[in-house]
Length: 211
Image 1 (tube, rainbow, N blue to C red):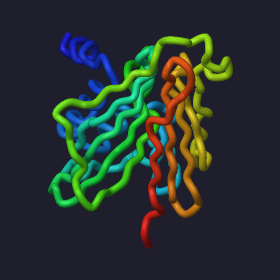
Image 2 (image 1 turned 135 degrees about the horizontal axis):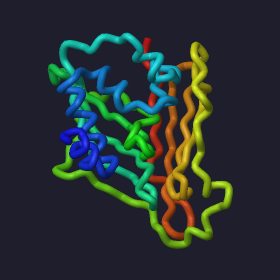
Image 3 (image 1 turned 180 degrees about the vertical axis):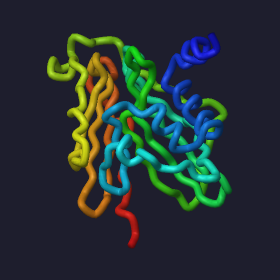
Image 4 (image 1 turned 90 degrees about the vertical axis):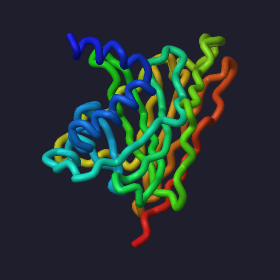
């Protein structure tokens, strides 16, 4: 009964993010990452890696990163979202931000993309996350090619993901694309439907890691 109640409480991607963060403290950082990752989830190290392969057998660190959703961009149908917010290390000595793509299916919310970077100063944490939802108006104007959910290529064991990927909600109102260069420099762009056309809501550039 308790598990049913917990699942029912995870109604939005913000709820899912908070549950993910709580579980990281409760059951361990990498254990929680494995629990909430979609089968084809992608992380960066700094090149793209399949999350389940990267996390397989990885021991949880003694102290766990803490994070909080600050912004959430959500498709009209409410089943695809991109969250962004601050993180801090367990000892609070390092800080940064994360960006996570969430997709809701019959199994509940699962993350399919996890990225972010460190910051010299902590990112501000709002009292409540800012949630911006795509317009549900003018959906007949959404390009037909965008009105079908993009399914990731099946994960192939031992073969890394490509150096670029894209996704969109089933209704085509939230679309995103990422690329990673050989240097590890990364770019993520996301657009939200406003009833007439798409508006860029996230244009994220991550510098290549310093040697």
